[in-house]
Image 1: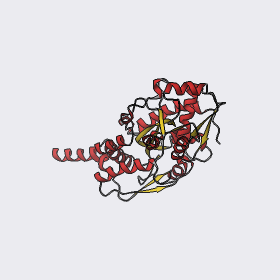
Image 2 (image 1 turned 60 degrees about the vertical axis):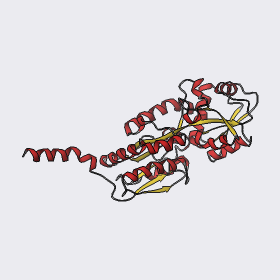
Image 3 (image 1 turned 90 degrees about the vertical axis):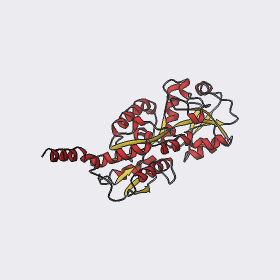
Image 4 (image 1 turned 120 degrees about the vertical axis):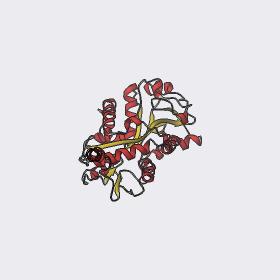
Length: 320
């Protein structure tokens, strides 16, 4: 009788760990064009997830538009059955969508189960290789008192927020400094390389190729510490203590998703993100992995911090 009781107890205790596993393909909604960093990061993580779970299949649907809002709106209409997930951008969902897509989105920043942040990369402040601005201190001094009109190329919600946050913190001269909108980060890099504009705030991953080819230079990055692969590049926090902002990519599920399904995603995605294989790939692509942001509670806490830090810089922004 004692053995039977112990067996039953083991079944009860371990039930949540194996109660749900995918029995059919999982549909993934990505709110950006095919080949976006959201998609690249997700594919790398799920390559490892499927190595650990050979029967699991992910079907990606790109639903680009409105900085990820089209995809998140669609996810909010799908069954909370564990077979529908999305891959939004961190600053876009938690901050930018409240500004530029407020009338379009059908959700709030905390309307989903925000499972885990797969990786982040800081913004880079870039200039043409011939620019006389070479350090964060030079940049801050110049943006406070520019000697002529200055144009800054911007694309996407995160790029605009990074720019606005910087201008807010330093009290930049908004009479002489203007931002110019572009369709994507690649276009902003080309605009700087061709001297069409003076500067840009772009994900460091988008700037790297142009930097390596000698077309632009990175004045500073917005991480809290120097990147190992770019150890010679300064950080804005050297002159603006505490200044940091990242582009990030994470996985969300509908709010009422079965906790057993959430537990499966939590276990398998965090396992993949922590793997040596993913870490090597992330390091090679200037992507930072933070193990403290791999569960819904931690992601929510991080989202609240982002909103506290960034929302004051956005109060005067009006949709364009």
